[in-house]
Image (spheres, rainbow, N blue to C red):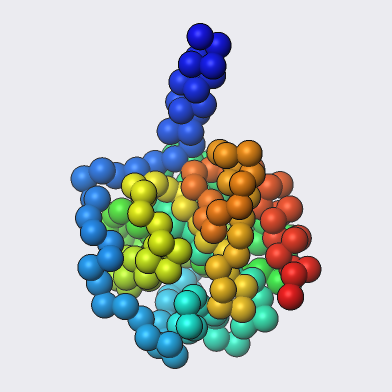
Length: 200
């Protein structure tokens, strides 16, 4: 009985820490895949651009290829996304010489003003893209990592030298996976980043 109660409590906590939009479930594999060398220019909602370059099986940022890239799928409606925005900003500030964080809006069609309000209200000061290309990039990432479960937000991947990195699965005793699902403790992310920085 104790095990059943523990499982129920863990399930409730997980779903409180992740947002999903079931009405948007579709086959994310039905899209035009990026080819090696393709360039995708993303505009920051607060000004400036970054160019993603497709590698064999991932992405790098043009001119910042030596940095680790974290891509965060988020929604302005998503409570866990709001709760972790300031933590992600601080994570980026503390690692800015080695890390780029790019947030991609997902599961919604909103104006840049809505995303700017999200950024201002919740302290999301890293690079935020509200591009029409976001869904295609996300579909490519999900195919790259062979993710076939229901999408939930926030969802993150970490890429180094164009290769998806192993991350700690917070919900499964820190087993190695190549994504973060839901709101993850910032210290866990920092510990993973410290390991990734050291690896060749």
